[in-house]
Length: 606
Image 1: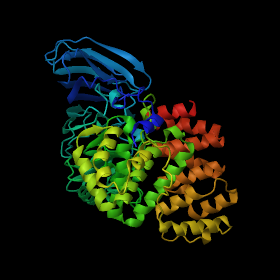
Image 2 (image 1 turned 30 degrees about the vertical axis):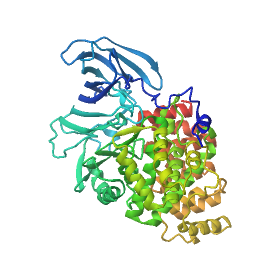
Image 3 (image 1 turned 30 degrees about the horizontal axis):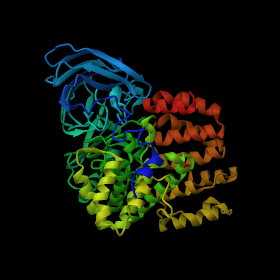
């Protein structure tokens, strides 16, 4: 079956150039920035970075007269050659989503370095500035970045596209007594004398540019791994994540050598908007993963797996995000199986499938393809459970069809073939045609492959994963709904994932008596596990179980992780808690990351 008919279902080839990154102004097909030399002064009083970015250029075409860069709300002070010759520049094409195109006139093709002096805005969407009161230690302020998908341009003028990889070096000046760390080689022995130097000699996509500054301590947890975080959280974090070195060994056995030298992690304040961010050599993680029982550490495995699928092999555009997240979500499950056992891996896979089915009830059918089709919209819309979990089901299905041994060989070769490259969906399809479709034609056809990728929803006949470990949960759920009191349910030995499954399988409508019984028996409202608390709050809000409101308010004020706050505010809105929502959001909003503020302001109508 040819590709064109299915492609026409998904988009119109004459309308979209599927090799182009529609979320970047950069003319990276004409001239490419290959190296960034960065000098930053961190000004907490003004909540600004004062920077100098020196860009090394490589010309792909002759007679290029302009360099186009991505910026957002940057204050430009000067643009010059390396020798100090001023260059003409202008800001053009302002877009609420993309920012502004910076057009720099190039004197000739021998101009191979551009120096830009600039300041960031206090409202930069890629930076969050925290007061001392918003940190665990309460003594020093804190700064951290979040560049993915297109927020690097709010703190560095660059070609902000995964198509154009860069190496970088940096010098960062911070107040004395504070530590700076970046997505580069970090040295915990460096004195806190206000100047920190960094080097990333391997080319990375710009959305992996990362910076954090604060009262940071370090503890090694293995020969290649360690934890940075505020001192009060260090012991708990090191204990929670002490299996990381084992995960590294497992991942290397599946995907090949780990090329980034070290896998350190930083546990950020609760306002960090994601579970994790795979910044190379320094994965950013939310403190909500510290549950005390290692029940949520699959996120560590996920960010580690990105070291191969995402950091080594990257999506060329945000339409192609599934190539990062689908393979990584699958690899996460393989790491969890090897480190924590088949039962936990199965449970997590079933939970993924449940999230996917829930997402499918609200996502329009035309957006239920693996390519995210966000070319003319906000690339943040690509970051939903559908992109992660349908793609993961696809990769699991490939393993099932080919057999694990054959599939592992395909994946190993795939990662090696595209190492340090950014690819589109169509490049992957062509690679699959030349490899697995030829070598395993008796197990998967091109029609089946394309239906997974370009078809809407799930392929006909796909059943999804199951786990016999959930049978006991189903039995107790039936008993409860038939009138058995919660205190007499048999729940001994249940893991966090059993409880998540129990809560997500409860019917939409429950009585106040049933909710009170569950809450008084299992203390869901007081749960310190962020995942269980979120699932319980959603059940409670739908059923107007008002005793949760004070705890819900405290939860939303304390935690800024988008996975939790977005659905909870949506539930409040649907359930008609308009006054409560407004009051909670007014208190919580100042502590949220700017990117989450923008998303919630829009969805909540503020």
